Every structure is written in structure tokens, then in C-alpha cells.
Length: 112
Length: 116
Picture (tube, each protein chain N blue to C red):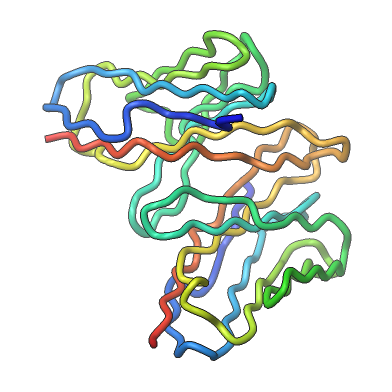
């Protein structure tokens, strides 16, 4: 079955450093979504990528969807304490009935 | 709009007790989902309902039952709670987009369940 793998599981960075999390699927995806979950909170939708090779930016966050639509990355430039949380990728297969599959997430800690 | 609401926020059960987790959404979404979240395991789908009147098993359905009461409400029932069901439970809803397979999920605040 479809699997979505995410690395790293944990990341500690100094405030101001950059951070990247990677997402890989065992099958081709129709789209990839990214969610953020603050400590004690619930996942909140950040963005969706649909096109092969697509790149989208939200302020200091850059999202990429691979050419083969099997991998994706989220890069945060100059991290701030407000970036603390767990970042999940989630993908859906090419069939219309395929359900969304979440990666296990990357937990980001910011060291002051 | 309240979005997705869940009750209760917290619950402590003894092994063997039963309970129902309630979820409601006011976004007129067709699809609703129940997930559990455990440390290091991410979000695992328990059951989902693609539309009113239909339910399907997800990745970890054993020990749970669901009811799609109407378009707004989707409940999750534990008939005989076990310590392995200690977890945080999230309900979510989505409206399938015009592009095949796209369905942004909106999550509720979660229910923290402890089974002793």
C-alpha cells in the first residue's frame, strides 16, 4: 500500500538557523499537503502542491513538489520561536478514491 | 463558524468501560475522519466517512465503531476500552476539491483519552 515517509523525526536548531524537512512517497501522488501542529494543538493546513516541480512560498517557508511527484520538502529560512511544532506532510494517490496518508511528522525545536 | 468541534476534551476511563467521542462540523463537508495520534506514530486513520450514510475502515479500526449520524456529525465509539487505546483522538472533515484527490482536512481540537 501507499506509504509516506518523512525525515528527520526530530530537529533542533538555533534560532535564526534554517530548517528543512523531507517527505517521500512510495507511489506517485496527485497532490501533497503540509500541516503544522503546535505543541498541545491540532494539525492546521499550511499549503497544497499539485503540479510536478511546483514551488510555493509563504513568507519564510518554501514548499517544493518533486518532478516525479513522489517527494516534497518544506524549508524554513531564519527560524523563529513561533516556528516550534510538528510539521506533517500528507499525500493522496492518483486514484480519486485514494485517501490522504500522513507522514509521521518532523518535530522542530528552536534553541534560543 | 465553529469549524470542527469535538467533545469531550479530556476523558479518563477504566479498562472495559465504554464511551462515545462526538464530532460535528459546520462547513457542509461531505467527508469526515477519525484519527488517533500517538508519540512517534503520526496520525493514523481509524475510520472515515466519504459521505452521509457511508463509513469505511482506515488503518487501525479494531476496537472502534463509528456512526455518521447526519452530514454534520460523526461519532466514534469504544465499546470496551483498553489501555492501548490511550491516545489523542482527532476528528477532521474535508470537501473534495474540483481537482481529483485534493481534499484539505480541517481538524478539531482533539480529545485526550486515558484508559487505566
